[in-house]
Length: 451
Image (cartoon, rainbow, N blue to C red; front, side, top):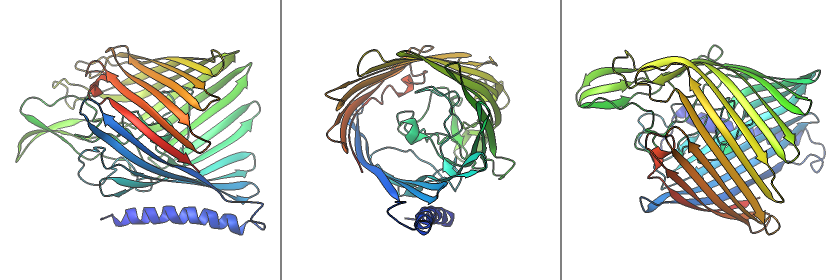
């Protein structure tokens, strides 16, 4: 196994950081039984059988350890380490380093082609006057939508398994400063993120390589995608944002602003001749964008209404028109989601959401519809004194008529052990967000032990 020297340092720094947090907690504790270091986590094994391919698509082992350690009466440390291994999942081919989209400080450490160790989170919570501070590697979650995102764009996402992972697991934590304080009836949150990490995009020829919305090269040309041109200046390329939140007249309200690099790069192209013939070369570039938005929600008895909206300035999309000089068009995007949650009767929960995104530049050859509409439905019922959970989610792409259906059954053997089975069923046009994976249907079986 060969690892870059800097990656060694990253792993060593992660271990030392966890050790330092535990050591600091022990030194600050006069009586260990009064300030214990808490450790919990889980071990899980999940297999996915590809129905169309009649073969194992994945066999993932995961071990996660979560450490909580008090440092002082007003400060605490949290660290999360995750080890994953999957000898069957096809991550595709990638020249160069394993995670070109991520900063070295946030990249997992790869062990061959099958396993990776990641410092998921490592942060200190403390106070400074009226400010509550969270300092370190963390997840910052905005918005009230489920399954699809509008405001939840502070942290990038690992998309190597499309959107099949839970957001908490696929969201990539970032090194950040997160500061909150009350201002009369409102709460002000300020965030500063010097970590230049972005979406982990599925590789070419990988299990969930994205093909919908990606222009094809002209006949006789090969497609070559270069490594992303990543921002690298510590201060100048940082992301910054703020949120104002309050509870007014029964409504939970937020106003949000984020000045950031879009986590999905633009792909300007050029043409060249090589030893293998003619090539279309894509040069991924990350572009600055402004997000202005907000959310609101309110409960009316057993019914809860949720909404969030966002205006994204300076968005870039690819065009299939070869009359366009670099194959990229620029415009603004307006997104919103309306959701209704209903606790229908005992042990039953139902949710419906409508999501729309409107792109203002209707350029020729644009590889997306000007207005895109999605609907999500979720239902869950618990049986046998909450030991058996039956649930299902349906995500539907209105524009292309494709979708994803995900039924799942979970049985709690005891407080520590869960076993579950489910299906990920894709259908519809290969031009759609979900239909492009029509041949990737799978049956999943899993077991998880918590400690």
